[in-house]
Figure 1 (cartoon, one colour):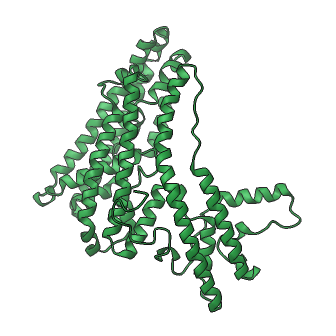
Figure 2 (spheres, one colour):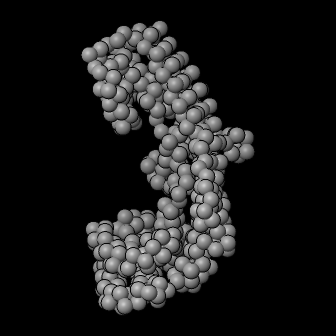
Length: 447
């Protein structure tokens, strides 16, 4: 289905570009902001969603075969619908050319086929859901509310635009491969989080779509004071979702056994805030050294102590980075809305400085200091064998400054791309970043 959608999207764009340049200049920038136009070209359901239906409704083998067939029918109907929309747009090309002096009429002509298809697309999705519900037995009907809630979350969570907004905690839990007992133990906490997240996602969707019944009304209302106020409300809704995710991470981590809670918290924060919590270059080298058990005992103890000290400083940097990132993200989005107004008024736009850049540079320098200390504990041969150590190797004496710079750039592009070292993962230790049971809600500065 993805290939069909890609080809059709390209064809649709080509059709729209056939509109006279004057109309494009007026309509296209606004249309790009209207919720729904981009989604109209993508299916509401993908084959990957089958697992949600199967697990969420506890389908037996016969039901699974039926649902797979329903998905195939949906896929075919979606492709046919896209073809019809494209045909309608091609049919009006002559009318568009004759009406090029009337932007509003051209806009109505172009939007008509898209709007018709959007309604057809909604009907296709509703029919799929209804057809699935028909085959359920009474025991499965009791799972329906929880299933539809999870399905909505899966479909809309990825619409987030700021850090922490679109992290999927259900995927993190799935990847932990928890046993049934642990899953049942945390279910009340996960359900409470899901209910709160579902409500906030619906609120965000409502605000993004806006109050207007048609695309033309939405486009004509773009950038009015009321529309700007709505967009600011959307940002507040995004912040609310991000906060629910952050609180959910802490709550679920507390509900899990300690070792799994640490693992869950680290992984969830890495997916929600990858720029902050992904493995650093220095961390990779230090953990690689700590995982080796063939060093003399005094060297091993010194490396373990060095890594523990690094974790403490790293956790402090990450906490401060998180606080600044959570403030900067919504501020940046709000400023972009204000900049659109400034451009229309002929004023200078404002570019906010990212407050995390300086801290990230300081964190990198801190890591280099620890690498220098590690280098003093090992021989050059031992250090060079560590994962990621080549990044810190001095360039050959015969290398020109330009070649050395290019070598460093190559290492930078591959940061965090090498596999983790074998053996026990030092990040599961209580001294690892996040390697402790999260405090009660409100006790941590990041809350």
